[in-house]
Length: 524
Image 1 (cartoon, rainbow, N blue to C red):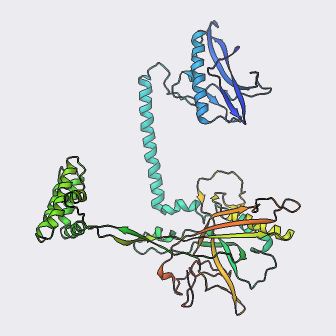
Image 2: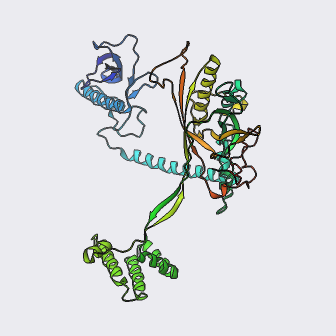
């Protein structure tokens, strides 16, 4: 066997951490044939080289015969790998031509890539695919279609047998495939209930944040297939831990609804009336238009305008308005953009009354922000703040499949996951003491179930690093951003709450998400 350097122009180089790294491409030839009189290219490899273009000591190949090694580390992007591969292909073919050597198949395959070797049915450069390839390709297509139909049939059978959720439940949030054990271990040293500052008066007003595992509140409604009677369950599944902080310095709640300006002129209002009076006829016309019958839509619209005009008083001005709309419509059919209001404005200095009105469009969800500055006054308090930060970071993180942890599956960092699980959610309550009892404060707003959408920690809030021995920061600035999962409705201002949804803010076993609202209570 003979080995030679293969000149690739321009050379293969890349910049890594500010240093230019080069690659050496080596081609190996060997003899073949009955008398060894035929030369073939047996190998083409690429190795990293130093500044003097000398192969690095102990360097292993990063590329061989059209494929980049998946076992060696390289910072080449996919685009760079593809570009270098094509350049190596071209130079390999050129080398083979100049040295009267048979080129390897991978170098002759158009469209081959650096991730998978050429397939048996790939077309070589300059050669027709041939009938056999076409026949084989057709057979493969038919085989794939039949296999796909069989797969769909099996899936449909499974769904029909146990329902769609029989498939989803295998990896749902309640399947045991998502680890929750580690979430409860964070506050193990505090029996699942951490208060800051340590030694604070238990009767002072606080913001209590309890973390719960999430469950889909509409699961039962979707599975039942009911329409118009969709009931929501509590999204709280099981309590994972509670953290209680002093009342925030800023307590603000803003309620809003989705009101938007809407427009409907007199013609549109009248058209709605006429269409509902003759719904069958106009429905049939719409069907003809959908079938592609020429002019069906235009004829129906002209007939509708005619019926509006015949039913109106002749001196009402409706004739001019309808006439402008007819001209606009006919012009549009001929390819001209002539808005009806522009005809009225330019011709008479008037526009049709749009009957503008603010209309309700839907609901909006509330968001809340809290800022805290926590000062560690002892090693124990530093430890509690560290646990607090860790808890909120881990609790609010998206979840990965870990298998059935109860059966001994190990939680492993960086593992693959077909699905992502919903992060944990929170029940927030402003707590106070009244007549010696801890109660939810009725003089400030209440919360529905919340997601922690953002959690930010500033470890040097005064733009200067201050720490105790061991590197523990003296001051931590925390920013919480919560968003409610469900909008606020007028029916929430009541103490009549369905079973399973009444919240227990004092930390009992209940997992409801709605607070009972009395008359003397600001509510949500």
